[in-house]
Amino acid sequence: MASWATLSPSIVEYFEGEDFYRCGYCKNESGSRSNGMWAHSMTVQDYQDLIDRGWRRSGKYVYKPVMNQTCCPQYTIRCRPLQFQPSKSHKKVLKKMLKFLAKGEISKGNCKDEPMEPTMEDAVAGDFALINKLDIQCDLKTLSDDLKESLESEEKKKAKSPKKEEWNELTQSQDMEEKLGSGEPSHSVKVHTVPQPGKGADLSKPPCRKAKEIRKERKRLKLMQQNPGGELESFQAQCQPSSLLPPKAKSNQPKSLEDLIFESLPENASHKLEVRLVPVSFEDPEFKSSFSQSFSLYVKYQMAIHQDPPDECGKTEFTRFLCSSPLEAENPPNGPDCGYGSFHQQYWLDGKIIAVGVIDILPYCVSSVYLYYDPDYSFLSLGVYSALREIAFTRQLHENTPQLSYYYMGFYIHSCPKMKYKGQYRPSDLLCPETYVWVPIEQCLPSLENSKYCRFNQDPEAVDEGRSKKPDRLQVFYKKTIMPYGVYKRQQRDPSEEAAVLQYASLVGQACSERMLLFRS
Image (cartoon, rainbow, N blue to C red):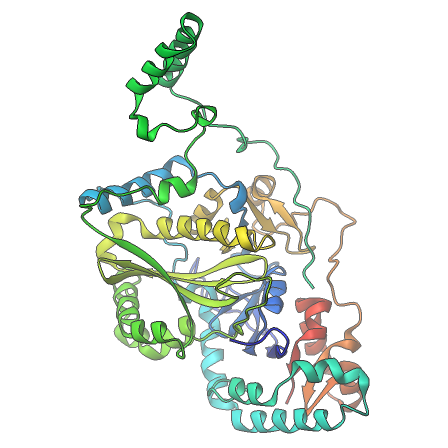
């Protein structure tokens, strides 16, 4: 795990989006368009800033849909776990799991709002050909040697150039060589105040009570008037066992998400479920020892749920997209005990893995990447169950890391029925594709009913506050040297080169453009 003080900068290789691709959602053969870049390495802070500008990763490929041109606009969605209350259908899923664990009962019928992601290929289906092409074209060893030589040169200049001291402290030649020698292509967060939700259910108020509960309440009040002491206690004892009685002041409060998930099981429970958080690293013994079982589960899932042929869900594909992450594992003193980075959350039932949730733990959120599970356990609605567990996990991390308080669910696609379920995890917000501020989903839905593409920020004067304002300060890695774009552009004569770099700067924003190294050949 990288030391916080010696953290290396992100290294990315940007590819300008030129063509339309097949859409994984509506199946339009040429409707999807996105911009993408290959992340040789990336800090968790940079990735946090990028997803707050509409980016998302698939393996080491980081992409951003061209929202006003793509056929199915993909809006980044986040849930606010601290205010989250499970819905009726969510509670049914949690109770179904508890019944199965306690008594082995198998309920009929599945929830309609799973899994968390439809298919891994949906997000960047058209970009796979580009990624495979890059694997063949790029000479990785040359880039690695060039970067190492550049960093050694920077070290020698350290005493003469105090201004470059910060970069030298951040860059380590050995780390770079490891990152860039993996056989893959070589070719500051603004916290916005969330507006109050508009019309709709007030999640801060308790749900409507049933008639039976109201009758009990009336009887309790009547008994209190007759005898404020013993008769009231007798009535309470008749309603429920004394060992389960909550404090009187909380008698009408609904059960919390944690109460529903971690309800105690009998000693003779039929099954045992254990959730393990494992870092995505082949250097981690637990990840390495469970890799074979996890991969077999992935193959079973892809073939049964998504009808993938065996040659499309091999070990190479599994490793590239679900085990290969550009995120550098970081463990700062003010971070969570598990640190930041990419993880597999494994669900072990009676000693075997039945589901794996791939997640990224970032400075301000837990970001859901993908889920795969054993189709034999579809009756447990594992897509919904895992999402609720990840929301509870975010709340747990928040206790020790207060700034980590959001759960990112990937993309919300209003025009795609199978992706609209993400809006059921309330309260949640959608990211405005023009100003990159968060807007409560209730305020966005009316606009989305009228148009696939919408600017959610209602202030016509509002602009992207994090936009690229000083492109000359963008950091470029070119010909064994790290230099600002202002120096780099004086060496270029190709006008298309400037257009590509400026497009990159506009998409990643000023903060990331100054921190990340943009590789140019």
